[in-house]
Length: 209
Image (cartoon, rainbow, N blue to C red; front, side):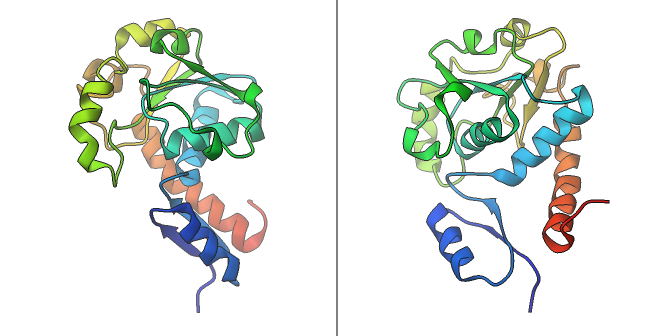
């Protein structure tokens, strides 16, 4: 009775099982492991602001969560690099970086080094949905992984800042960065609508006019 199904859920296995038996396209709206719809909007925003992302460097600062892992997958498809910096114990789980060659990303202990000469700096909340019980422990662990003006200065002078929102000013990002001239978070948020419209058009019609 429908032409497309979009699912936001927890375990990736749930959406994969649904898709296995579906007769219509199934869109991953978000799972614990991946968030492809967000990255479609983010990459569209980068292209809109700076042109092709091929050959560029994206710095991911913070938790190696679903958004981070999807950036890695996008790097493999579109030919750019991802520098990831997380606190100890929160590094990328290699088993979840499926289909991503080691040449497409590097892990850094120092977030400043991860940001050095990056074209885009991006982050997310320290505690993702479903992990609220870890909130206090994460606040302590991630205190040195806040995107501030110093980190942005390590990036290229024309580097952009993105955040999938909602953001916690003073935690994963300072107000001067998210409200500053390098920030495109509001454009990024608007583009979630446009990117999903394009995705639906491709799935239903096979083309974009």
